[in-house]
Image (cartoon, rainbow, N blue to C red; front, side, top):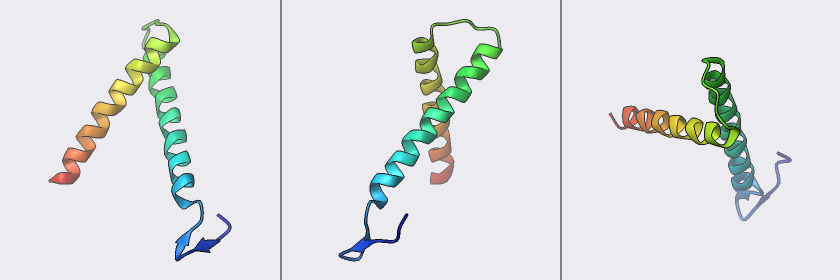
Length: 69
């Protein structure tokens, strides 16, 4: 973010990308959980998050398969 580099690599770039990815996954899980709750399926929060993660894994797999083509 600040533009620092060491040995030709930007300092903290990998960690920042990992943090952004983790936050994006959390947001996606929340969105899928909200959609499932709105559709009338009441469930415990932990089960709902597990279900949301499974849905996101399937979508990610489909996306990777389309990129491979």
